[in-house]
Image (cartoon, rainbow, N blue to C red; front, side, top):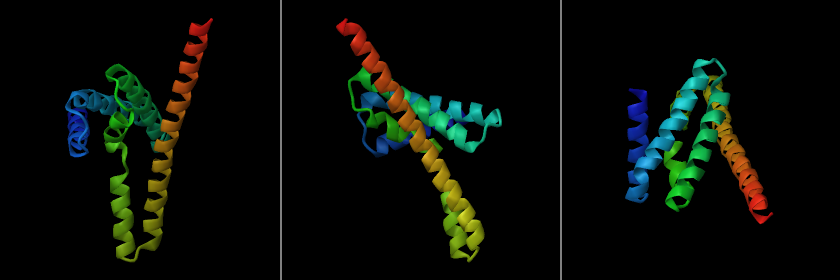
Length: 144
């Protein structure tokens, strides 16, 4: 059920941000692979941050593969695919607790939001690093 909802959420956000129709299915699958990675790492009790890094890494690499395959910009796949990972619940709880005067609890949730967002950014950074290293190695190999 979560996989279906993740696919539909990614697809829906892709439609909202108006990505080309021929990229929607691939975008949905990149989001699903990222979410399945998140669930797998989370079920191994590796923690939320590592699960987000792993999922963002898979999304980043999947986005690069799809971008090259479909000859489209990578961001068309990155942005909608990371929607299931966005810490919206924690952000809502932080704002809600600030509004009700529970500052300590709000700061707790705000720190969680910041750490999850940082984890997602780190996963994308590692994916970019891996891809650049791979493509440079392939380029060097071809030039020999």
